[in-house]
Length: 343
Image (tube, rainbow, N blue to C red; front, side, top):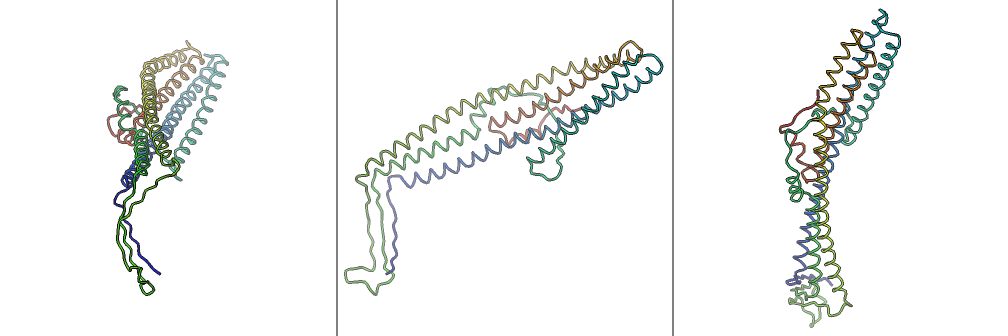
């Protein structure tokens, strides 16, 4: 016996439409999750990328210090041989030069480690050489504008909105079980030789299916679906508040790095002038080797701090964009007006 059956639901209480809308909400949820992951990876990439630029700048500064102290040691030897300075002054210059050599070697290792970490996150087997320097922005929008952007663009809120919509459609589907299902059907016998007189070779009609008693299972499913939707709505509200706090925190970190960089500029000018004065005084026998070394180390420390502040600014900016749901725009933002701060 072979038979072909066709069933076409014409009324399901909204179950089919709810399933379609729930599927659409699932697609929106997946897209928002993908965009959220992309934003997170962008901020991670910025941290490793500019970490290499920072390590390279520290290496350059340590190289300058080493070269300067090499010259200072040469001068100290000449002055000691001519009797202008004591032996202790020469020893101090030698100790400072050896320390500068150790710090330079350590900075080279740090640079190699930073490049390895960057190559790892990029899954690159060849050495990656970042070309975009550390930078600052000439102007920054107020924090309120970033909070508004987070409310409108953050994929976490879009994801939770999709989850809430899906929960609402599941609730609608659960309520549809309280209504009957009306359907049309058709039957066609494919093998008619063994049919009896009472068995038709084809039939069409309409049917109704309705569950009278199920031990409150349908009602319980409705309550569960309603609670899930309420949970999704409350979670979305909490995430919205958390995002405002996160954006404010990232913004404050951004501004702190910018203010530190600006404040260090005046310190840098004073340190450079102090080093020039100490070198001149040492050459004339009016200052000690300790004075020159301290001035050089103070200048290099300020230079490193400035580069660290610029690095903190660049990473905080990427994290701020991520918190606003604009992680994808970070690379495009760099193509605009920026202030390069590397010397």
